[in-house]
Amino acid sequence: MKKRNIRRFAAVTLAAGLSVGALAMFAGCTSSEPEVTITYEFDGTEYEVEYVLSRSDAPKTVQHFIELADAGYYDGTCIHDYTSTALYGGGYYMNEQNELTEKDYFAVVRELEKAGNEFTQSVFFNNNGTKVPLYTVYGEFSDNGVQNEGNRVNTHSKGALVMYYTDKLASAKNVEVTVERNDGGDNNDGASEQEIPYSTNSATSLFYTYLNTSATSLDRQYAVFGKTKDYDGQLQPLLDAIAASSSADDENTEEDESVFTEDVEMRLDTLDHMGTVDVFADIYNEFESVRKGGKVETFHVPKEPILVKSVKVTKY
Image (tube, rainbow, N blue to C red; front, side, top):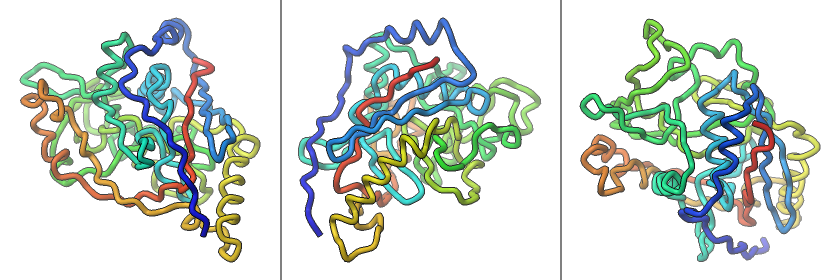
């Protein structure tokens, strides 16, 4: 198998100077179906893939994703996990030593906020009656008590865009947070706020594009908030290029994701949560077990990087 030299791609750091002009546009005019264009780069070629988002399915998730995109958060990240069923991205980049590195979400968004970006909050830590924002997003799916699954516009079909969160330790599932709901939620008597587990309301920036057509129970566990606008015309060429690259690596091996990727073990949640920031240590000490414990997950990392050059909102 040929060894490919992974292209060096520097991390997008705290980005304090990013423009916030697009936020004014967002505030002034919104639609039920915003659109974004994700520009992927693979093997020197760019692929622009348009996605249509759905506020009826997941209004808080859509708002969260758009605000991160407007702030430039996703620019310069990579697809950190590639399988035959999904492209996972939004939280990692390749550093100058060609190593997969987790982006410090909480530190970055706080710096972006200081620079003038606005992030709408939907999840809070209740600190003796004071709601402290967590910068995560409310889980808009049925396992979190959201009962709109039967009327969803988008489900896990080919090309679905899904907000992802890492599986948490058992101890984290006992930590409750305050969420601002779209509805009353399960057994909540129509109240706009509810105390429910952090584990299902801990999504930050991770997302994936679903590539499969098989039935799945994932709709109950993750928020589907959009779909590719033209899967065959825009995303399939990228997948074809990946397949061609895999075949070129080893002519005697049938197309297989294991030819294209290498397994890399990553310890999750090392930056979770703001207990990593000294000033918040006392307030967020309930999250220390999550951060210090961590889980190890094996990512199927592309040997030739699939970069996320940019995520641009084209319709608000």
